[in-house]
Length: 115
Image (cartoon, rainbow, N blue to C red; front, side, top):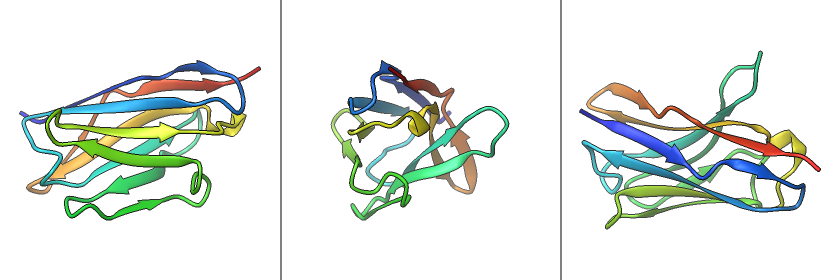
């Protein structure tokens, strides 16, 4: 059973930083891609960043230069370091992977950027 569990969300002021974690079980983050998405009420889920097994990564233009995705194979966890946060980054953040064609999502973690 593949499970993803996000943590690390919270309330932060504009310009602040947060680090989100996505802890995986039932699969290895070193052998599967892991992506971060975010969603705000009334809007479709938006892709944020992806880290593939070979180490390549990609970011949405809206977060490029501010967010960084990484992983710790020993902890089987993928991280999303978010710097210079803006109010428009406010959303529920989800991590996502696909194993043998089956898609998996975590339960999400809320990030709120407000003064």
